[in-house]
Image (cartoon, rainbow, N blue to C red):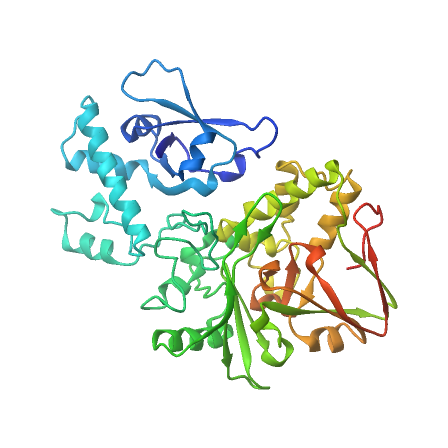
Length: 458
């Protein structure tokens, strides 16, 4: 099932309403030529949707006076079904090169279907996007050479991380040029330059002409990552743990990949990666990885009483809030740019001023998707607990935020990473109920059940 929608302005996913009891609907068509007619401005785009068979339950057909195409209505959010966003001027150029007049609807529709199908197939094959008309035959050698370079216009590379079968990858994208991994690394460093490939993670006013490799301000700050990827190109890196993300009605698992051991100044280290974020942590602090679990450390300074939030048996109202909360987590995880921004929206470091580090954007997403993080005691406690930070390194909790600290463990797929320049090897958890307390140093811990109106300490 492939659908098209023409827009006169660039696509803004935050304007698509959240699903709910009466989810909003959006008009699409089965004809790219008709969609292109609606994208009639220089900045227009055509959205290309493709979903599995079960997605057809969310699509209905509506009445329309246009006999050359069908009007198809999609209920709710459709971000994870988008396989391509094609500039309208690129499609118009393709029609001009083929000599298709605007009145020849059947041939125009067939030409655009074939052209878009080639783009999607190239994305899925992990190749650079198919050459556009700007670099086709009959143009100057200079233009052709430019078209053969890795494609880097801002906003043009897909950062959707969900695969066709509903799994979420830990890379920058599930398909296309950004779907590189240590097992299949890029040939050069172009795709590490986030200013070109992930411009949406930077704060307004950041000079994107400066090279921001891996999102860091200076290339020298990323030397350990460059060393890792050089080894990856030589086939000298090994994955020690990892999992793909998964979304169900009552659970969300985050994707993550861990490689190592790598040589470090104070001993072997492990490299965690997730949607453009990286953490290098001491291997000695993560002894449970082979069992699929990570150790979490949290410093409490002089605090002696610790309250741990754990959702218990949920009543129907709490179950509804829980599923809305998981809907927020799923929404941010299916796009690498959105995932990166949401996990850094509360960081406040001198090293993070160039990214969207104090946006609190996840609060806005929660409200848009119906999660009442102010009035509902359960949702508020859940939301506050999900934004508490842990560390993957013991020294951070013990010395930087000690002397009192707690040690916990949780499944590997239950954590989300901030990247290395955020400091403190910081992570957050998705489901606080899957965190198990192992040690309490200088303090006493107790559990807080789901219905408690008091916000937990951690």
